[in-house]
Length: 340
Image (cartoon, rainbow, N blue to C red; front, side):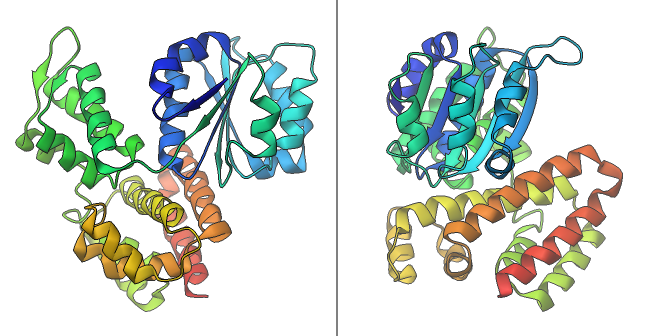
């Protein structure tokens, strides 16, 4: 079974009922991850088991073992995998050879396409879904935001939906998070709809610049170790929440991934960003920092950055007492990597 970002919404419910393996790929990593999250919700409450492509490349049998294993408390399970390219090919092939039907497996594969080996392995199977996601344009994300809002019981103008699309850098995962926060703030539901306005969005929005987070993000991802030290000290003085700061890094990394996908193999980053500004996908004030960061974070380096941020997020949530120390140490490592 195959899907694109246009056909996926209409296929999602059927796919969740009929498929056991989901492979979401393409240059729009945010769209692929959001699709995986939608399937996870449709599958219902379950214990979430997370693995990386690197884990499965080292131990291809582990996926089949996890998919067949029983939760300690007898709960349903979902296997979630973040990977790059065809790292999971051997693991998926081993899983498919198992005679036992396992728990659902959801794979988000950056740098992979529907022509990859894993996609070809799954494409013709009735129990598998392969979804290919290309970077969306502004109009498509605005429409998605309004659809999300309607499903959450929010009435929303096109202008407000556009503001959310811009604030989240066309990342539908973050847009969905903003919609969920708005619905909670306004006590909205499909049975009791509410009207969302700019004031409500201001109250709950992820205003990273107002929170003083973006100077830290830009110093670290630009490899400016001297400025990074001063910005981290300022973040401590302001009492900025470590997880909130990490989310700001995740948003910028997701934006870089989308931009890198559209940039492709072109070398003229400045001209590309001028085009992105004309298309209203990049804010003019962000251009210098984005140009600097795109030179440093592309291809495998960017993939490793995304994986590191995801791993760090899990660590911070698991050990909140030492979140500050963990984050400062990780950001120092990322700064050194960016400066090379």
